Length: 386
View 1 (cartoon, rainbow, N blue to C red):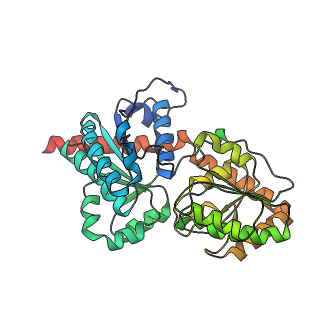
View 2: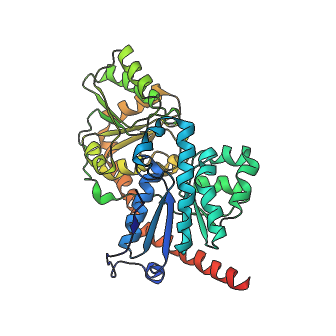
View 3: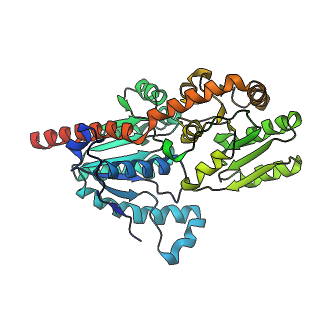
């Protein structure tokens, strides 16, 4: 099954910024996970491609997790064989980059960096194409500090490094890298904003069930909330390595009214937010979670740890309540305070919704258009000079 190419058909001439109109003839190759891996990078890649297409760019998609042939899909259950086959399909697919004007590679950290963006960087250099590295991982500090020759030589080959937050920009600056900040994207129009008055103890967690997202702490906080608000409910959306452990913990503690809904596709997320009143996030490693932007868009009260860029997103408490990491007691107390003082929460939710408007597609697309134009022009100059 070949990956799709996105041609441009939509016209938004009146709303398209001039920088976008000047570069819309460029072909942008987006190298990123597909939504088969349901995570922040895949969601952002899809949103970006849709917006670029609407802004009259030509876009081709090169998935770092290409579809396996039908008879070999069972190999996805065996990690080592899955990785080998994935690379045997993915690396040859990078030949398509020779048809691009600019390569836009999404990046995480550690082995994911070596397996996905690093081959794309080398292919772009081989074909003399400008390469923009879009780095998203909240683990950047540890990655840059400890991975040495497995990361820094490759970063020096890219034309531009773009990060979604000032938090990551500061980390890269510590290692001598100049970066540009372009925020993550959220389609606020997909979410029906409503003010929760009064605020109900209908809680939502939509982070994947991995240790760094601390969903176990969210459950522990909910257990405390449940003692004060017996009618409270918690919906847990997401999947991951801790699913069995978390479900077992709920059962062992006889915690009622916890609903695990598993993997939820992006089109179904607005309904999930609309059914809730309070969004909980207990992550211990993070950057700029799209889930919080979605909660902003829908009007939920947000209670979160301040990890990564989250403190800035919540404006140190002006757009949501911040609690220390690994502190379920503090999270439970913050939720109780929100439920007991709805008059203070409503202005907070309004400020959060206004903040979400800064992350909409047209604004973000305009910034990417500038990056593509600069990268393409610099590459033309470098090529002609050589």
